[in-house]
Image (cartoon, rainbow, N blue to C red; front, side):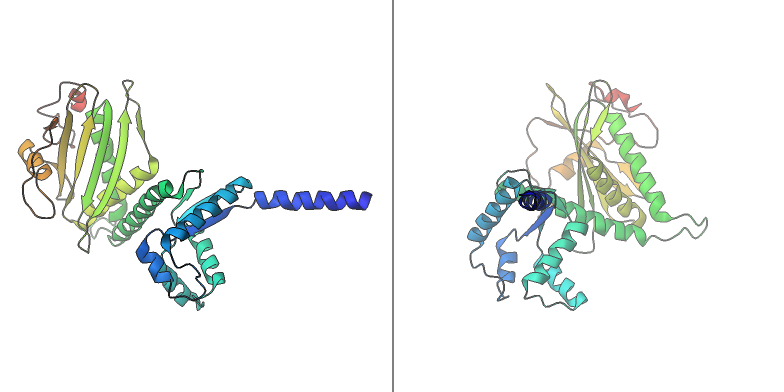
Length: 308
């Protein structure tokens, strides 16, 4: 009888151990990636929609067992390079499992919270894009090297300057919800883009996501240290007031405030075609705030007088 009780306890402990072992599911988010994996005979799925339903079911079953599960993106191109570098056969489930473990350790993941996979994927894609942007911008910063005259690390100095600029902007605009976009010219056709959402209450306390702020400052710093074309656009929303839009352009190792006319022209021009687009109703276009400590010559009436 004691032997039987001991065996039951061991079985219970083993089952509990399974629930305490985290899991990662790497998903092929779009049709193109799914099609790329179908060339492997060990990949048994032939319909993307059915595949996503099966992944959804797997996530639910893991959650039902109490297993903490994270979701990552499976990138077929990166997977092929991974297998080549490690001399692995890409046409095996073992190689896909090993790659998934690598992505879980170094890539972008989101925790599975029970929502349908269709609702989770946009957030996962945003996380992956944010990480890729940060990695690219960090690589640009690393190329900066040291100042020839003073020996200072130019990348580190640029990041400090970007952080001060962000702090100055958020302190100056004051109360409200703020949407900032930093865009910097990249090596390809698409620019590096970082988005930051912040909010400032009546008490002056600023709330922002640290991960977003890190990416934002890194992209801005990359533009500063490489002297690339780019800039920052800020949109502020306050209850009962029109939204206001301000802008700055990268120039001479810093941010130059745009005039009201320049902000209007930039916001009302199609970036792809260069054609004018109608101004958005209920939006006011304002000059950028000077960031060198000088007072703003045209502060807003509600809260932005703090510019001085």
